[in-house]
Image (cartoon, rainbow, N blue to C red; front, side, top):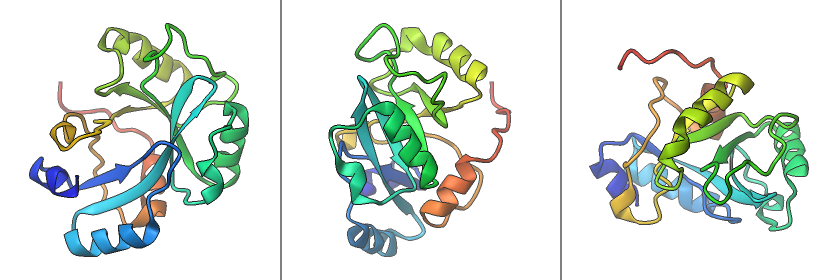
Length: 176
């Protein structure tokens, strides 16, 4: 996966397996081996019928499969992590979690698993709630790596650097 990301011209990637954190020792080895390419670890958690990407936290407590979204949101907030609603409307015509009351940090507007016909609705929702938009490959194979990606104009070092950068205000794109 790392070699495919480098071949696709990416500078970094985040592993977010379902209910499983990437091994930190393995990530250190990969980061040393493929430097300056950066590899981060996160986790994808299903809660209240939605999938959530959690970044910046490496606590094994996250690997539970019985999360409810309000509890997951409180946990991520209290530990300084970052949470993104992944592929909204993939499984349902509506978002099943209360993101008005428990606002995530971001929402995926485009991916291999985000319905393209809902993009305008997702963009409007993000604007209303003040959420950062993400375009993620959601790659489960090397062929999908780099299909979608986020551009971040800062050199990121470690999970904290990634989270700090994601928390910066979004600058309007100069590309149309």
